[in-house]
Length: 531
Image 1: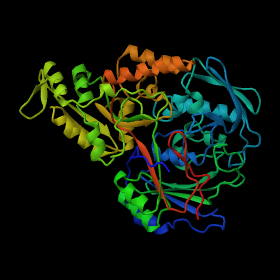
Image 2: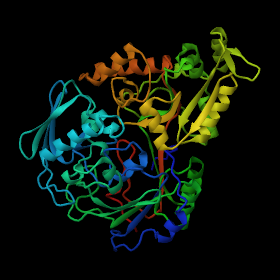
Image 3: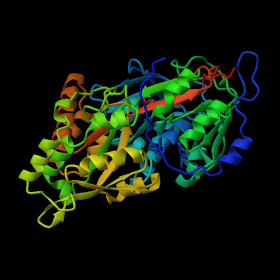
Image 4: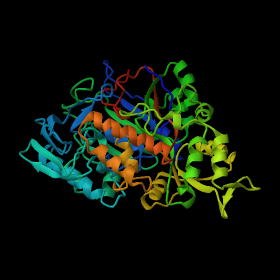
């Protein structure tokens, strides 16, 4: 087992109803002599808000939805290879504008309807409709950038087309965000799908969702089309899964130790050594994509000042934050992409902590230190607000560090709804966030202004051109060169200030087996057995 350092990406909703929930939870339940059967009780950190895997970006929602839907293809987390899943074969044309798939025979949804080419086409069309206003299905739509439609050849063969090369589509087709749902789910409203769940072809079927309390699901009988990357074929081993929403880390770890929970997510870094030493199994994986970072909105006049962003780039002590928060074995981020992301390039030479130089940059640019310890220029305070909804302690450490060089960073600590609302209407100064994606197209999702779901607000035609080129370049070496240039430009021009590499850290009772991460550091429970 490879133990790496972690703090999960998201935090949020309250679980004040925990006492009542625990009274109804009994970890494991009865199992058969071979370890199959039983109920897995899994404590997660925050409410999923929406249990339709095509719509959300919240980590816990993606965990949960993965168990219910399958994808056209799968991605090997060790090699990055794309392998068949619902599609028994697939082929792309030379310029990556057309992708032909042939579906497995005999795949059905849990409502008994067949998986057909037309259902897949309707899924992709619906995703584009859902994402049209930028309020939902943004991750799924990003994988379908340039989508022009799906041509159905017959019940098992279809071609997905784009108006320009889409180098990230195949990887996107392996995610739960492009997981396939039944026509009956497509007929529901977006809100109904979020609350009621969806009908998938996956090994589990939703039972119920009680917001801020729990999500439950049961084994689907007759499942027989798992990816070759899974450990077995046929029905899932577990009878049932109960995801308990438990926001307090101490309650999650205490519940693991008392036996109330079989597994827990978002294990506090400081608790990992004690949990591992006590004999619990610890599972860890680095998140690919963009590290936890500060992302400035350049429509803010203060942050539009190049000198301010230059000072921010070298005025944050990432190593101190890593150590203070207990990530002693982790390395600070060194680029716009996490070190485990395909396409990562080391830009640490641009990110060394140098508060003296940061102060000189601000002095030279006319930002004068005020009596209150906050710099000022032309009557404007060097002040802005960072909006985030997890890791408040980390935000406070950044705030303290920046205060020593005369920068006033206020904190708007909100919930997931407030955070994504601020992105949707651009009403933020700085975002405090990470973005998990298994490839360098995370940069386009974050920064490309022509992408309706972009997070950052910048005005740089040169970067926009690089982002467009890398996502439409079929040649691997040429694309990597563009990705290298993109990462350096983003760091050098202060469009992103990486703070911490993100990891997923989960823990289980010692007799549980079969837990597996996917290529995006999300997980599958299909192979899990209880002793």
